[in-house]
Length: 280
Image 1 (cartoon, rainbow, N blue to C red):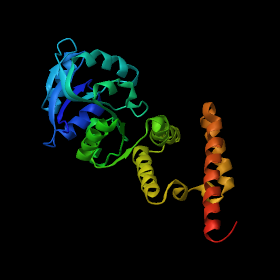
Image 2 (image 1 turned 90 degrees about the vertical axis):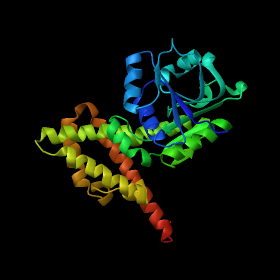
Image 3 (image 1 turned 180 degrees about the vertical axis):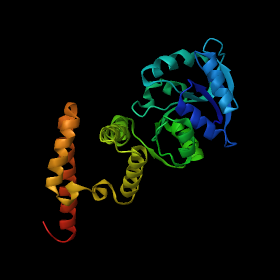
Image 4 (image 1 turned 60 degrees about the vertical axis):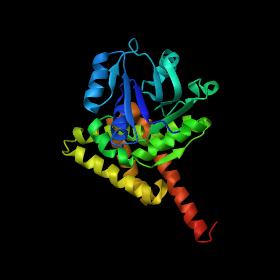
């Protein structure tokens, strides 16, 4: 039996977007929305247009699917608070990319447990909702948890990978590098555009990132590399390095580190090309 009633403990943007998408699918139905603040629970339910808002104090019991949608640091604490109120067949999930589902101590109860991590940004709910059907998930859990997790992600995008508990931290670090580091570097690009009075940088930067992402999707990061390092234009690399260090003195080493990474990518690309052509 695959559970279909979905309860949400916490009112995160991730939980809202996942529930909004799931409840558009008739296979799933809303249960409780639990929050310390009833106003937050009411907002969640009002905008979701379904569900029953409640607080921890008023909550009587939970059964079915339970999303623990709170920050990583308090997932265990919140779960220990609601665990005594769980009855019947239960499958509990969190959305952390870093933590495994083993933090849910349920295996002796024959309950399902899992983690469902969406590889996308939820900084803007409207943008996120439009992207959910393209979202790629990382899922992990015990046997029953994985059965339910597959059903959930297949109802959203049908795009997912199954993870071992031991790989969860490295998996999340890779996501941070691919997403958060890019955002940080984009911030530096914005600062340069602004400093030199160059307009429309909020059009330029996303377009560059989109095109780069498309290239990476087609040929991988090594072959997708363009620019002065890939061309061996070291005069440009040196002069732009001077500008970088003048404008970002606090991050002066970052430029050299990134150039070393790009240089290594070019070396790897050339090595593979030589190997294909019978070289050494």
